[in-house]
Length: 424
Image (cartoon, rainbow, N blue to C red; front, top):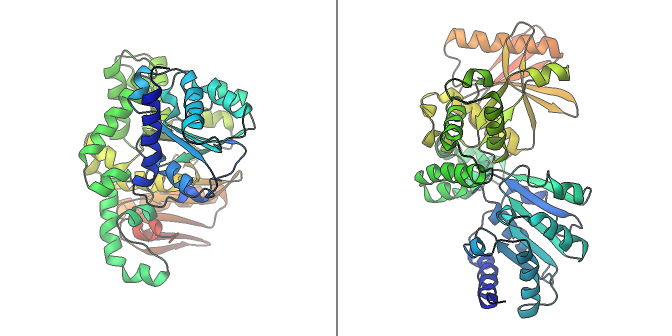
């Protein structure tokens, strides 16, 4: 192969990157095994730290393990983009580096066309432990998923949660005392977290311009190029509309005219935006699956920092920013989140579902200082608590704390900082 020398240099470069990069611990590492017999796939929005997660997994390997790490976003693969290159990489590594290869780590695997069968062949014909990442929620929902049913395990990577953000910012809380002692510093950092979000590079470098680049990279690489979209302006307008109206109920029908598009096209584009993790969807809970499927859904930005930098007037509504951030913190913790509407059509921002049971109701409001706002939030919660037979609920505010009691029910008003540090 004429590119053999290039391949050797490529492998050497990416192997060295594992030791050369700087790392911060990520909570997802507690869940991912390093010696699984199943293919491990990690999916998540572009630039959320999947590469670092793979490299941290490599760092955790048994010293006797022999690994190959390749990032398929390398320019080398623009001209060498075919599924056969995967087998060539393996053979080149074994010939020139180490015959005893045990672990294979393929980063952003979706960049290789028709990669699925090559990975399946690799899985069936060897004893390698295989780890792959991709920037698509449907990375393994197609052919490969069918081919390896029961032989892969999926994990979702997110931008930093608040505990990780504190660690990236040099604050490591080991006990309750440190949480109390550093309370003022943590409050200031929470304001920064709300403002710049959780993408690792902007957090470390405090460069918010990166977030605009991320937005356009996701649109161009993970949506427009992947799905060969010709109406680029339409999908961009839809993305900006959803992010700018974060937390609002979406009627696709109402967007047909302003986007000059069809119902089906908007539906398809919406699916692509979700698949690329640019937006997240929150459905309405109903005991009737039919009603639930027909109900309008709410959409939120993948990151408040990204939203602030690209959306129209997103940062002017602090309540919406906080609501978006609270949702993301739940999702990063693996919670199943929906919204709820009472029989009187009062809305509750979030309801948490666990083992087919609704166990927590949450409203988010920047402040309850306005009596009408407080009355509205409490009324919605009390109605939902009656219907769902729950005795307590929560209102997350920026910095207010209280307990509202009503007969046998309690609504806990808690400041955001208490919610975001609850697991520390």
